Image (cartoon, rainbow, N blue to C red; front, top):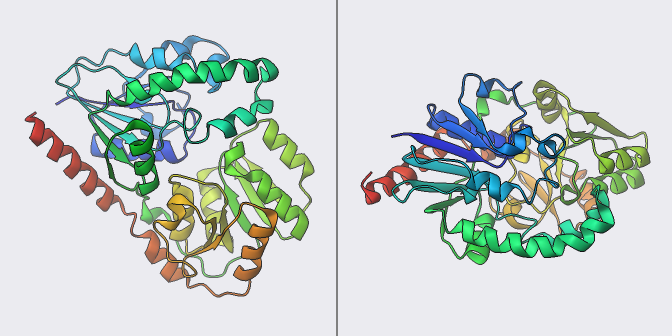
Length: 369
């Protein structure tokens, strides 16, 4: 059987790309299709057949998620996947909209129904000040999104079977796409993470510097409390530059650092902060694998897989006061790094592979491929 894996774009190496690498371990001969590819530096893509869309050849648009928005539906519909028996889309955006022949089975590993069409539409609309087109985009985008939202719903019906990365994502798939899904959590390679019991006196946050990740909340809170924190991102945008400018000297920013440096920070930090409302995020699980406790916003996925006040500590509101209250409580508590590590072990490679393959094989059997 020929297998293709389709993903929205390949530029960095965060959660979606980690899941892609996991799928490639399960299906090592799979071909890859994506809107744009700018990750030649990553060894997991060496020697692989990667097909990009026409957007790859459009200067400026090929590196802008926002400006290429209206082109991606057409880009994914233009891929010819007729020679493949199984297609797996790894999607939080438009890649699930591929068109396959009737006998092809299309599995979608869904990271979330497209945020800017559905659950976070108003939040994205309100952040237009970060867009180059600004006032024109504010006027035009509601009209464009209305049409794209219709396309996205129709595209979801091209999926034969949804796999969700969390219970929260599963509930959104049901709400917005009217489809059922199987929950299979992503895995982390536990062998890459070592427990460090002698923590240093700083907090840590790692992620893309975009509004919903709440870097602004972290900066405002630590500007007020003067505690040490390291903020790691690979996103050099207006928000990053504005927040870095307003940060006091207790806030250290690290841009585009190596994976090895991030692993060191996981091990050394006394707590990892997790302020966004997220569907699933591998990064705090990686921190736990180093025996590092997590202070998280008590919403959605964060409450699915943790042991409160044993591995994680929650805050109830995304406010300076709410986060500071949790930090104050954390500093009165003692956490067991080995127990934290044990909780991370629930997200093992073997478990993910077994659940994923069992689900795929079960559906293939029922379709008699």
